[in-house]
Image (cartoon, rainbow, N blue to C red; front, side, top):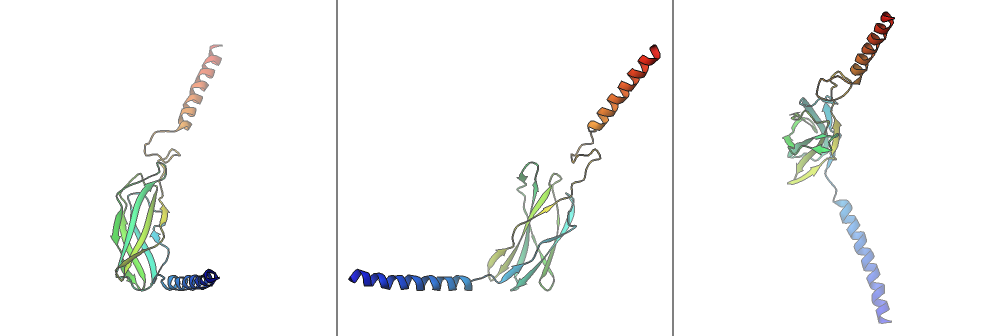
Length: 171
């Protein structure tokens, strides 16, 4: 019977501690709200200079950095050279930075903004931006100027026409 009384005391204690823990966890929320990372141009070309901007509300960060990594979706590889550039305050809560992309084979970039408040770094969600990959004039996105199958078919058609016309003239 004595063990039953102790059990009845432990359950309310566990419930109270759980409620207290939930209150403490909900009170500890971030002081920053990150907007969407905007690139200008919206779909930049590889090796171009891109302007990034973001709105940050809440507390005023002491430092804001932009993290950019260039990746190639065809190979599934991201370059290990990550650019980490300071962003400057342009207007109330709006931060801006320019970055020159380094890799011609990149098809998209991953970016994230980090803001420092009270010695603690907080980050925005990672965002991917697709790069505009120019075609080389032959219907593919490759980097060589070699013709595609349409030229081969055209040459075969000309040769077949010459052979057919040559046979008709002989008869």
